[in-house]
Image (cartoon, rainbow, N blue to C red; front, side, top):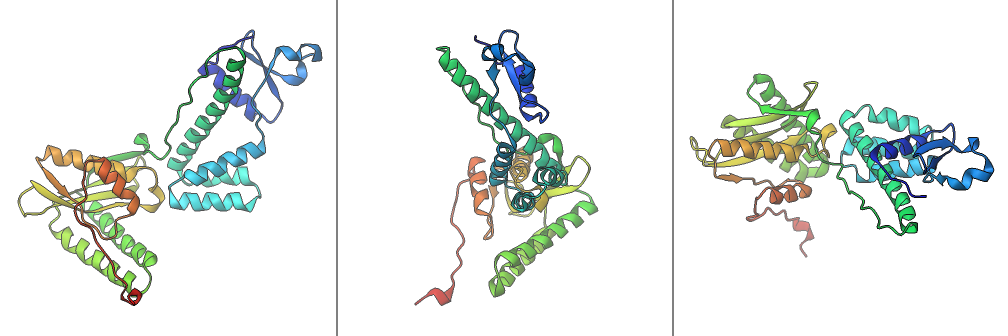
Length: 302
């Protein structure tokens, strides 16, 4: 017997699949879920078994989530939880509570994965009924959560102090990434440039969580003093715990909108230490590449 897969029924199936207190089946006649052990054996063939789901399925889904998670701090902590093999499900949830934005992405990811599993299960039955398959929606999970962050002009002294702290933190990150003399030199170069550019900064945009915690910033200065026709974006920074959520992308977008409102035509970004993955963000926002930066290790020359 055929049955319609509504959003409400999908939610009920997900709940039943995760219920550890019993195994459920679907009655196609009225679209209700029933505990399998309460149905007479001679009638069980009239019901549909739900998609297979157990602790191994849940563990594999957590592994998939961690593999696509871009937030570096949360990713490493969650990976450690999975590797421990002890109290994994409880510790996974507890770790996510330290990263509310990532936790919300996890629940969106989990909901989408479960829905896709149910749709694949339903499509098997639709084929047996001689009907076309339903399409599966593909969702992205690394987009910024709009309700979790606010964007405003960084005008206060506290904003400027936080920006300075972020610039110092990033200088430390550079030294960690580029070891030895090169790391020290690049860190010094960044620190010197950011300090000089701070003196002539026209404006900055900061991002905060809904609780008011500083999450990142973008800084803009005019190339020619007094004229906003052509500007440089010398720095864009996202606090480590909020990386991988699309916040840098949103900071840039907010900045460009503000520049249009100010009558700016040209925006220039030039950085020797820009993360490779951010280049695609610039291209998607209409930037084109002109020139590049190079580092040569003279000891590699024969």
